[in-house]
Image (cartoon, rainbow, N blue to C red; front, side):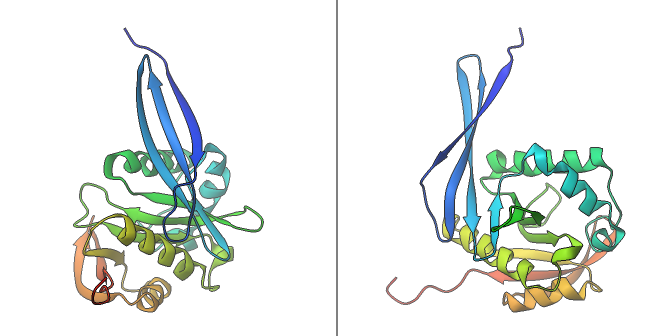
Length: 210
């Protein structure tokens, strides 16, 4: 017999570098509960938080813009149904891997800016530090700001030695972000039928005695 589940959310005060509150999502089915946490990270201008159903309109508008989408994985615009599926998969990666993608919003107004985080589908060679902002927020240093705090959180929370960013060779803006982050281009390879540069973010070396 199927039992209806209930989704509840709570906040706690667990902190990591640049980390605000943590969103705890609990799925209750009968007397069994599965819980996972999605931290909220903050910078001077941005807030990285869990995706919400109310993000659909802004995110669908962003992904309907060919200028925004030309450099992403499949290089095409997406429908609202596809965007909803993407949001669900972003949320679903958190309990499966312990890390995932955040919605990115302006800290002062709460306006949807884009998405950033750690993306790792099954066919990815390693976890990717991914970032994609809506057109009005380009060329303001926001992608670098968001990616920096996401990478800092990942290296603080998990003992991974490195992250990757997979960038199309003609996506010069994203390449500049990777360079500002100190990443290095390791190779060029094929991913889902397209050519990407494989940029690597190495874990910062710890100071002696720490």
